[in-house]
Image (cartoon, rainbow, N blue to C red):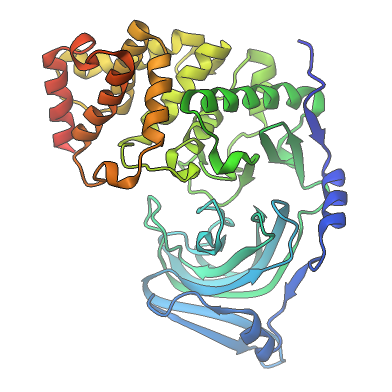
Length: 436
C-alpha cells in the first residue's frame, strides 16, 4: 500500500509549539484553594436547585479545598470558565479528589460543562466511587471556537447516561490545574476534515501507519456530506479524542470531539486498518452521527432513529468507497446489506412486528436497489431544509417513518411504500412502533 503524502501527522511537540504561539492571555490555570476570596472570584456553585451542600474548607494549616456532600443522588459542584485559550486546541485539566461513601451515577467526576458552549456533552475524567484518600484525575478537552471552556468539579453528572449520572456521598476537590496537554501524552494525526488524538501509551503507530486510515475517514466524511448536502458544525474540522470519562459499555460517543473510550483497545484501530483494511465500524458510525441534522443547525423533527441513519450514511459511504468494516465478519462495499438483512429476516421477514433500526435499514436499502442513491440525496436535501414547525416532534414514530418515505417518494416520482413494501410489512412496522 502506498501511503499518501496529503495526510499530515502532527507530532505533539509541533502542536504544543503552535499552541504556545497562539495563546495570548492563557498559559495555564492553577487553583490550590488556599484563599477564600480567590475561590469566590474564580468559582461558582453549579446549581441552587440540585440537592447537597458545597463548602469551602481549610484543613487547619491554611490549605483550602472544596467539599460537596449529598445524602441523595445529585449533580452538584462548582464551575469555572476558562478564557483566553487557543481556539479548538487540546488542553488537560487535572485535580485531586478525596471521596467518602460515593455511590451511583458518575460518582465524583471532573467534567466539561456543555452548557458553557461546548459541542460535546460527555467529556469527563474517570469516575471515582467509594471511600478513597486523595488521588489525581484528569481530562483532556478541546477548547471552543472562542478559546473558552467551562470546567466543573462535581459529585454526580446532571445529564442522562445509562446509570442516570447522579451520585451521592462526599467528594472533596483540590489542586486544579489546566495546561496544554503535556508533550508526549497524546499522539495527534490530522487530516483535511478530521483530527485524531489518541493516548501515546496505547497507540504504537507512526505517521506511515496512521495516515492511510485518517485519509479514508476524510473520504467517509466527504461521502456523508454528498449524501445529505451539508457539513456539520459549519464545515469545521471534527476531532476524535480518546477519553477516560465514558461508562463501561459505551465504546464511543458522537459530537465534536467524537469521544472514544480510552479504556478500550484504541491502539488496535489503525493496526486493523493496515492489516485487514478495517475502516472501523465504530468510528465511521460515530462520524455518521455527527451528520445528524442537529449538528448542522437544521430541524431534527423528522429523524426518529439516528442510530439507523448513522448506519445508513455508512452504507452509502461503504458502497461509494468500497470500504470494509467488521461486525460478525468482514463486509466490503455494498455487501453490508447482508448484515442488515439478518435483522430483517429475524423480525419483519419472520412475520414479527418490529421497528428495529437494522431491520428498517434493510428496507431502505431495498429502495436504493430499485431507484439508486439519488432519491435519498434529494430527500435528505429537502428534509434538512425543513423547519421545526414542518413536523410535530411529538408525532408517533410510524408517522415520522412515513413522513420520511413521502420525501423519498417525491424524489422517486412514485410511492415507494407501494413499490418496495408489502401491506403486511407496513402493518408489522406500524405495530412495531406502537409497541414502543
